[in-house]
Length: 279
Image (cartoon, rainbow, N blue to C red; front, side, top):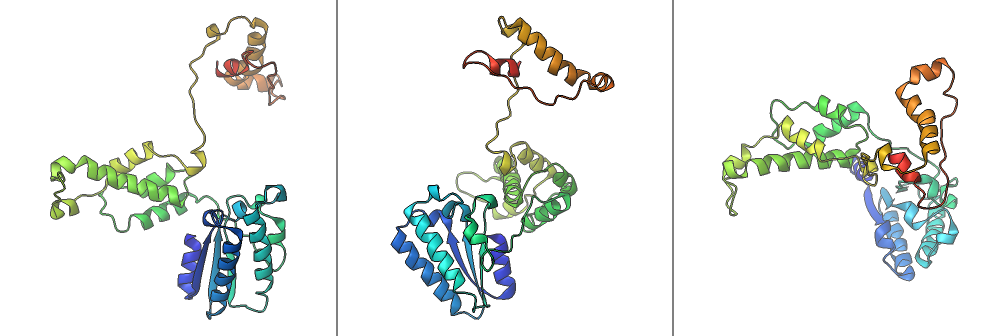
């Protein structure tokens, strides 16, 4: 969405935004009408961009997942996009987190036939993004964006924006009592003197994770071999296959015992497979 807004601003184009989450909450007939109006309005302008967010949610690849609204959306969108072939001043853009899940009919020539991969920024990109999100912040002299960028592998733009907000909030919370920011009374001069420091960013880092990891829980197991009753043969085999390889990789390479890279545990539910892995 940010890129679509930037393109529209740089080119002076009219921008029409269509959000997938809003589409799913509308009736089929109502949305078809609104979609037609968006295209008609775009055609009236000398330059126009129509941007559709969350395309995979409203135009999934597998038609078995189609609802009434989704089916109407895809049919109407295909018709409208095919009608733009003589309107070079109108561009239709869309965004998705899962390009492989979009209906292939939308990706044919003359429709969404140009794909642009917006990947995760590298160190330099993250440092540039940090500068952008803090351009209106008062920063301490010790703030080191190069170090912060190096510690934020996997962070995307939205993650870094949240990181900066958390750092600023931490600075405010730490100085509320000192600067007299209590009881709804704000000393503007004192508030303006606050500066976000490297310590604030470090605190924010400790409280943050990349968006891609939000659904992943990292757990440190506390189970030991002594917590597992029986299964002596299994424990011995696991120790030989896994524990020895992890603890002595060089010896395993020397004797060519690294050919197997995976282990499959099988057995009925409740027999201790997960417990063995945790141990």
